[in-house]
Image (cartoon, rainbow, N blue to C red):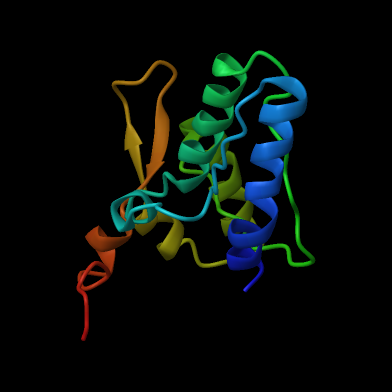
Length: 136
């Protein structure tokens, strides 16, 4: 409901104000609308949002980014990439305290071609086969 209100009532007024008072073009970029399922599957949502902020900074002549934060925290994604040495330290510590590392080993795969080697969080659909299936 908040997004619809912003789109219908607030943003048009901001666009007019920016154009009439300052000769600037106000554009809305909503970081969560239009994120494709494939980006979610590959854990790329955060990276896409950060690239969009970089685009705003690169293209804008004045203020380049305004954020509206609500009263909810949202999700806290685990890293898509982590240096393999750091992941190994984490894994060793988990083993030392008696934790099961099966899920960690299943979800992260080492990329030895990277320098330094990194471990990559696997696409959701590679482990949860029906993740991208649209159920109607």
